Amino acid sequence: MQKFIVELIGVFTQKDLPEDYKQFVEYKATIQNKEVTDDDKIAVLRVKDTTSYQIFFLNDYNSLEELDKEVDEDLDGKIYNFSVRKILEGHING
Image (cartoon, rainbow, N blue to C red; front, side, top):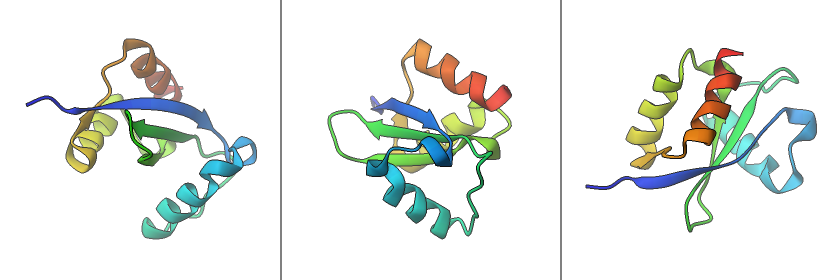
């Protein structure tokens, strides 16, 4: 069965996060009991053709595979785009 396609909206820090996504970041931080710092890399992903925005704190991952596992289990999705995968991997490993 095909997974939902997950697209990258952007990777931001708290200070450059667009206003439209702040409520999603606050919600995710609350449920994870996380204090977001200026050093956190925040990935905003979206399930294609929806308004389902998902927040991932990239500093919390050691590899792209860890992020892939969470996207698969929580969203029943997959990050197919090679360029997006490379961008996320660079932020996780960088």
